[in-house]
Image (cartoon, rainbow, N blue to C red; front, side, top):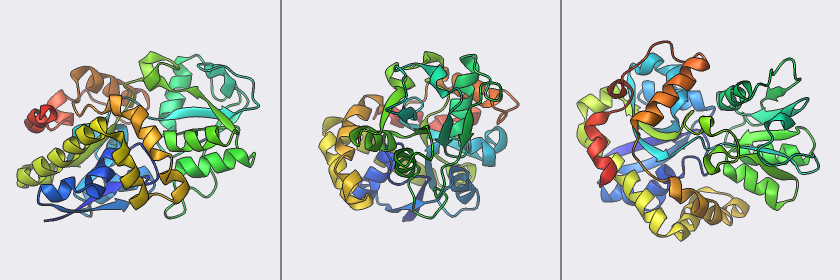
Length: 309
């Protein structure tokens, strides 16, 4: 069966297990002819799911709520990676130590649409008033162009002096670090920054209620493909190089293995009640959620047995 997996950023580690499931043949092993479709910005990826243009989405869990209010019409299937994946990178000539949230005061920070909400909430909880403290969080010029990776473009803008820092995936961070133009200030998944932000959101595999209800075999097959890929990458992060050569420009393809080797400890497909509660609180705090959905209203729990395969 032909299926499409929508992703909002292709040259990225954020949604890598879903892309790797296609490149490494795990979807094919489940009898699915799968393609990756890049759809940016991220909320449009979920709009494509709503409109039946893709069967799965690999994207930020909280962004689903922009298209499916209160989780009506779609569900999270499994985690692609635990925790909020984005990092704050600042120009290397700015005097700041890792974990110093206040470095953003008076600075311009590049961030993608809806991704910036994670940074904004983190700053609020750290006692920073974005307006009072002169923090400008904005899109990076050119990142809405077709096929552009936000993280890669942000690293380029940082080097050109167009921004003081950026909030993006580890691919953008790695580019900035290796070129000497930037350094990581916040990485909450690895304990650099407030631990309360860890479960704001996560990279997740999702699908529509319509498909979940009408074609559970398809959903289960897609989940098995992605979860098997997570296990394979944990066993051999070197497989990431194969995926990089298929989807990435040469320079990014050469460094993706190192990034994924650092990411695989977070490759647990389970969505815990603790994570769900934290994600819902975050979504309430940023205005994307008004109610208090039960766990089974946000997660397709009938497939949770696949998490431990």
